[in-house]
Length: 254
Image 1 (cartoon, rainbow, N blue to C red):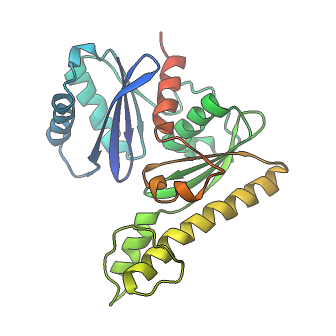
Image 2: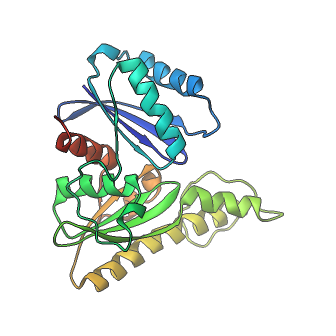
């Protein structure tokens, strides 16, 4: 079985693949100050809670935007599964040409999203990944990662409203029925969620204008659940990044 690990700024997502089928998924919080033993316990809890036999895991690949945590997990995978995990980076083949000023700056999560989307939809893509940050990606007609835009994510926006103001409360992200809120919670939820919803639509139009033609639209990321029902023109793919990891592992399999 293949283990794919997505280490983000907020969450660590684990997935187990039996060939092309994702059979097990698990999430844990990312806490950079956790020790290696604590993170090892997280993996052990994951395996135990999902009744996974560690001996069946024979391959692993990691995408990490938190380098220190990615290094810890490479050691943990080696200890628990007795195998060397691949880490998405410049030394790993991805099959994704990168047309940016500095290709080394492009994050592993963006690369995996693009590879996953290309696998499912081909080229000429506008990909939206709503996580800790909102990422808007462009894959051009030649199948190359040709740039992106990055903005604060939904949860980040809601947290900033609470932390940087004297009177506004913490809110749970719940989309109100109306844009015009009649109370503080609805007004804040409206501002946070509809701002992001309209930004997605606006960026889609702007990317298509610069590309010079329509693009296939894909939506993913943990916060996509809050807006996906209002974006019927987008194909929602929950596990897009893990699909990208699966494909990258194939390209580097000996």
